[in-house]
Length: 294
Image 1 (spheres, rainbow, N blue to C red):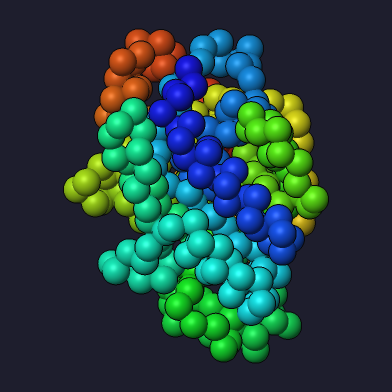
Image 2: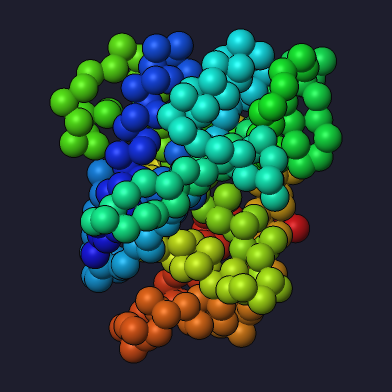
């Protein structure tokens, strides 16, 4: 079931895309909204998993900047101007890479947040950026950073373009600027996010474990073929090896922490009897996608 709770966030994505199109600044939409859009437009129920899954609502626009964009000071400066123009304000606790604004929804206030993340630059472009981990920005740029996400190194591999018309808008953009990561990239990002959050008391990484389950359940043959192509070119890269290790340590056995966290998630518990029947298949699929070479 696809929640309509994300529709206001989609509206904010559309208004952002309209402005970014003027300067041909492409963005990759990750996080909960990316999964929502992927489930809505690029995946379908599979016979191997004969059920649908709830997708959680979110208030965040997780925007990934590619390795070619994060080194481009002109486009990053323009991006900050657009964020200001649309009424977003800096969040002091994550200064200059998280921004928020309030919108009115059914006469109630709702906060929308932009979170900027960046893929690591190519080695030849390292001289163009300033890195103070976890922050990265082009040299000479002020008042904007992105969070350097090493696990997004392959974020452009097998990406899919999202037409703004698909989002219910009658506006036509000049450029293809909205992209979604492949299902395989979502899994890489979510495995790393789970590893970061699995001991945090706020949720112990439960919703990241659910996102991994949800992504696997919705993967079709094209997604599996895409994952193979990704692995063919990046299987020995450190970020892939890290994802494999996280999978082995957390999702290779029913007693592993990742499977425990998954089964603690409320949406899983509501359909526990059904989902439990497919946990072994889920574990095998994840192992096939992230095979151990050691």
